Amino acid sequence: MTRRLAMAIPSKGRLREPTWALLEASGVSPQEPGERVLQAHCRNADIDLLFVRAEDVPEYVQDGVVDCGVTGLDLVYERDCTVEVLLRLGYGTCSLQAAVPREDAATSLEDLAGRRIATSHPRVAAKALAERGVSAEVVYVAGSVEISPRLGLADAIIDLVSTGSTLATNGLRSIDVLFESEAVLVGRVNSSDVEARRTLTTVLGSVINARANRYLLCNVSKDRLGEVAAVLPTAGSPSVIDLATPGVVAVHALVPAAMIWSLLPKLEAAGASSIITLPVERMVP
Image (tube, rainbow, N blue to C red; front, side, top):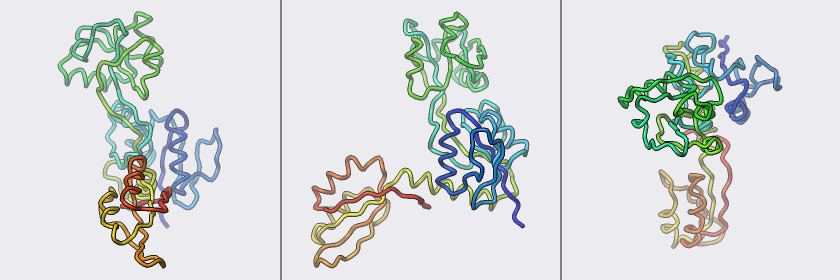
């Protein structure tokens, strides 16, 4: 009998919904949906889910409470847990930045030497300061870090930034980026569940890869096939299929979704017609 894999995922916060959506798209979603569910089994997979705070996932994985889990890369480093990053998930992207009030003259992290810095990530902040040779007082603040300078608690902050709108709203401006973060799947170091983890990372990874690509189809006359092939940003050769119309072929290729905007006009100019792009459900490299 195959042992079930125990997986921890965020019960709330900015990582909860995209994690749930990734599981749904991968076909390993919970049987019992609901906001207050703390444990659930997965459909079509030998996985048991445990819903916990994202901050606690690294320790749960390290201590063997679960086999793997989804959390932020910043939380892995802040908790200083010994875990293995199995897969970067492509959402929850943000960066740990140093910021000061708009009127402050500081322009880099080095300008904060000898000053008080408020942060909810004291371990990562202290390490970044040490690596840059900056001696400053780090003040731990659990939440609402952005208001610290206004309250006189600190001269500057080091906090996670996604769009920068919260900084602007609180009269702050960024002066340095210390750390890039995103959601990650982490696992226990030297785990014995190698096959189960490989299957999970392959399934989740296939959805993540697919989201970044589009399946493109177009028709082109054989005498202009070389022009179309030269335009396509594919790693290998596209698939070419003869059509019923003599001298015309259909071209099939996977292309990066981010390039569709600039690619379509180039394909038209190269002689392509009947151009179609479709979302991809799974993609295993």
